[in-house]
Amino acid sequence: MDIERVFALHKFFSCRRYPAPLDDILDHLDISKNTFHIARNFMCDVLGAPIKNQRGLGYFYDLQEDETYELPGLWFSGKEIVSLAILEQLNETLQPEVIKQLLQPISERLKQLLQKQNITQQDWQNRIKVASQWQRLCEPEHFANVAHALLTRQQLEIDYWHWRTGATNKRIISPQRLIYYRDNWYLDAWCHQKQALRTFLLDAIRQANQLELTAVSIEAKQLDAHVMPGYGIFSGQVQGIAQLKFSAKISRRVSRESWHPNQLSEWTDAGEYLLSIPYSDTRELVRDILHFGSDIEVLTPETLRHEIKHELEITLKKYV
Image (cartoon, rainbow, N blue to C red; front, side, top):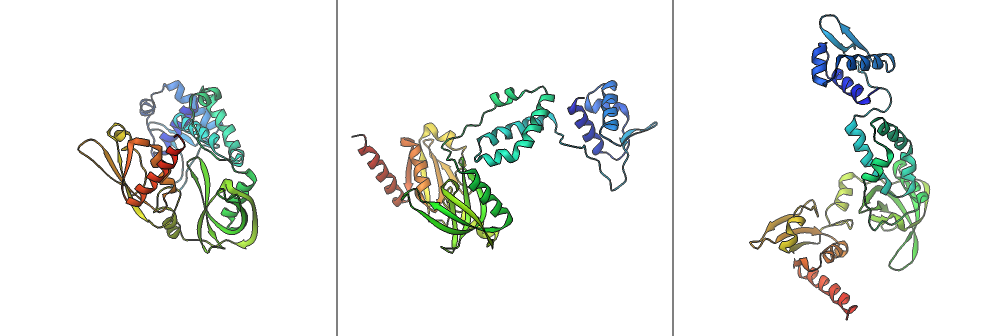
C-alpha cells in the first residue's frame, strides 16, 4: 500500500464534514478510480477508517460533531519523512550517546518508513551530512543525571573541573535549562554557593549526584535576562556595544549572518559592512573577531580594540 496515498486521502477527508463526489476526490489527489478504491479499502479494513459513501453525494468520514479520526501508529507524508531523515542526521552529531539511545525506537521506525518510500538507509545517510566541529564529549551518565534532575526539579551536587587551572570543586546547583550551542552542551543553573545564576560546561562536570532536595526554580523572564542580553554563551548584563567593520570582499556574506538578536547594521559608501552587537563578556567575541583575520576591524570601544591588538601581538611573537 502506498503510504503517501493513504496520508493524502486521510488529510482530504479530515478537512471536510460533508460528502465529496468521487470525481472531485480523484481530481484533487490526481489519482485513478482504481487507486482510490484500493486505498479506501485498506483504510477501512486495516486501519478502521470510518469512510462512508452517501449515494448520489459522495464519500466522507462518518463522524459525530465532536469526534475525530487519526491514522493509527506513526504516519508521515513523503516530504515529512525526508525532513525526519535530516533530523536523524542531526541526531548523529549530538552528544552524549544517551540521546541516541532514547531516540533509537524512532530511528528504527523511520528506517522502515523510508524504505517504503524507496529511500534506502544508505541513500539518506550518505547524501545528507551534518558536519560537527570542535565538539567536546561529555559523559553519558553525567548527562543523564543532569537531564533527570532538570526535569524532575531536583538539586544536584557536582564535581566541576576548571580547565584554566585544572582544579575541581564541589557545587550544589539547581538546574534550570540545557543548551546545545555550537556543537556543545551547557547547563544554566542556580549555584547555591554563589547565590547566582551560572552557566556550566557539561563536559567539565566530573560527577553529578541527584539530591533529595527540590530545585530552586527561576522564572523564565529572569533566566532569559541572564542568558539573552550578552553575546554568545557568556551571559550577563550588557557591558558594551562592539562596532565591527568588515572588508568589502566578505561583507555580502557576513551581512547574511545573525550574530545577535539585537544587532544593528549599516553599509559604508565603500561597500564595507558595519555591525554593532551588545556583549557582556569579551572572551567569545574576541575569538570570533580573530577568526576573520585582516577582513575585520574593531572600531569601538577602545578597550576591545586594545584587547584584540594585545592578542595579535602575542600571536605575532610566536612567528618571529
